[in-house]
Length: 209
Image (cartoon, rainbow, N blue to C red; front, side, top):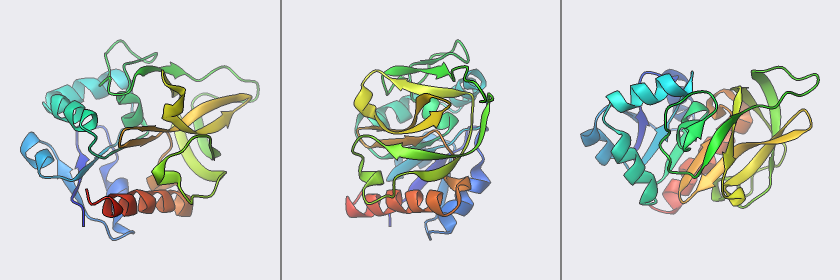
């Protein structure tokens, strides 16, 4: 069984994530320092809140260089919601630099008739590019979103699933090297979210990370 670390920088709903992984019989190790991080086979970067405070908190942990090296070296990481956004270079939400491990930026959701910002609630995701985590995964699965911003990868193939926001397709799942990141909250997305989590855990086992 892979040892999976859940990064704690004070802005992630750790309990909900832990409970979701517990339901698929996968324990998580809370990561607060580099020593514990290095002992893991895979990482989860969660996130709830705003971009600038998140980067400030993450810097305080001294984990940023390790996370950047982790992704660049092709080690598996799962980003959730704000955790996805932090992987990019910058965000319309603030002035801080992101981790920059995925080229591109985070933009505010477009003004759309009959759509409110933040986007809160259930929406389907649609697969558009290949990703091992989405193999044999049903298209148009409904996931739970809470966000006002979405990812714009420089490489369009980094977006592997999209979601409709009004008339606009926005990125909802990105894939880069062995990093998978979701704009929605799989841990709050019922059976569909649990299936995605299980796919990720099974992929880790299959590839012997």
